[in-house]
Every structure is written in C-alpha cells, then in structure tokens.
Image 1: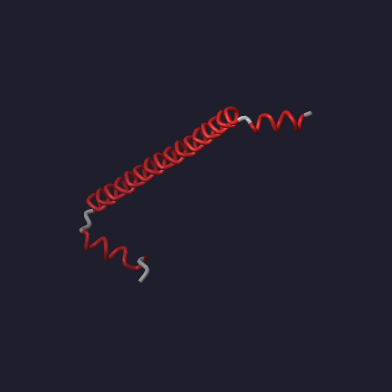
Image 2: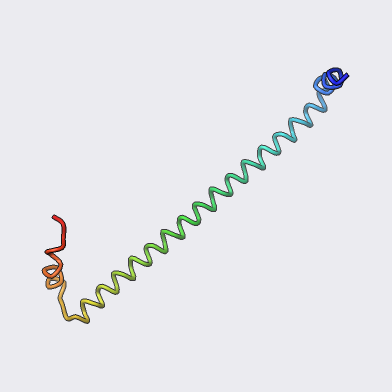
Length: 87
C-alpha cells in the first residue's frame, strides 16, 4: 500500500514540481546563510587587521617619543640597537 502511494506521488508532476521548488528554496536559504557567514568572517578579519595596524602605528609613535625623550637621534638609536639586530 505504501509503495502504491509513493508511486502515485512520484508520478504526479505537480507534486514533484512543488517538492523540487521547496528543496531548491531550502538550498538557496542554506547557501545564503553560508554566504552571510563568510561576509561576517571577512568583516571581522578586516576589523582585526585595522586594529593591528593601529597598534603598530601607536608603537611606532611611542618609539619615536621615547627616542626624543632620551635625546637620541635616529643614528644614535641604530648604533645602540645594532648588537641585538640579526644579520
């Protein structure tokens, strides 16, 4: 009895078209969710990169301020740091 019912549903083109549309809609919904997740991840990565660049710039400014406070020129600071530089 179940087989006959299943065969009747599968044989009905209207029901199969509706079923295909529903499955296609679900597929698009899932694909859209994945796309949104990728966009969110890219947005977070861009924000993290901007934050890292800001920290780097602040470190550079702090280093320049420290040199000025110590009264060292760039050349003097290079000579001071030379023993620790890898060649």
